[in-house]
Image 1 (tube, one colour):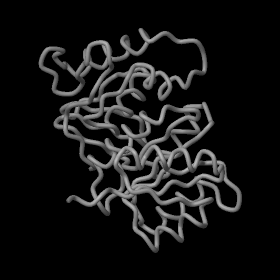
Image 2 (cartoon, helix red, strand yellow; image 1 turned 90 degrees about the vertical axis):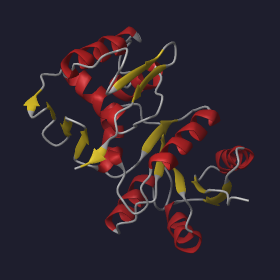
Image 3 (tube, one colour; image 1 turned 135 degrees about the horizontal axis):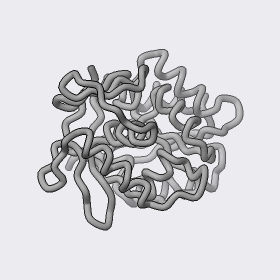
Image 4 (tube, one colour; image 1 turned 135 degrees about the vertical axis):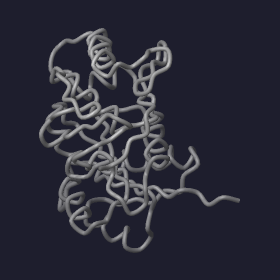
Length: 237
């Protein structure tokens, strides 16, 4: 029998910690628990889980500082941060610091399981996550995250800021079906009332600039009624 993948759940709220652990166990994972960042670091040294699900706001040692310590030590265990912060900028900073993904509280446990499985599929043991790479490449497409520039066949594309952020999110979540609502949350952060058609408009912009065929996409695939998926292979450069 194949060994179960191990998840470390880190949250100072015992109710959340216990309910998440029970759901993850029912979903086929082996689960360990920690109350805060300090306990999490101790558990990592002892048990070597495959992925961490960690709250941001905790006493003693919070999730962001725990993540920083891990990445400074070149520990690249996949990490999903649980946050109540709605701003896209704050969450983008967490990804740049080395989180593999984030999930806003409250959330559906099924969504967490889907994120965990997607991350474990694409994780390269011992390597930084795509979300921490400064340059992402997919075929002839190159995204330079520091300079906020995108190139296709070495020609710079002229993208609106929202289209660039949308492309960045899709490229850091390759081969993962992402709903329009999730993209609204990731790109616009619910900062103001924006309809899901805003996502479709920016996807159309990306397809025009990339010369991507909607029927035979090299980059962005549409799942009718569900969302979008980046189908190109994404690599760190």
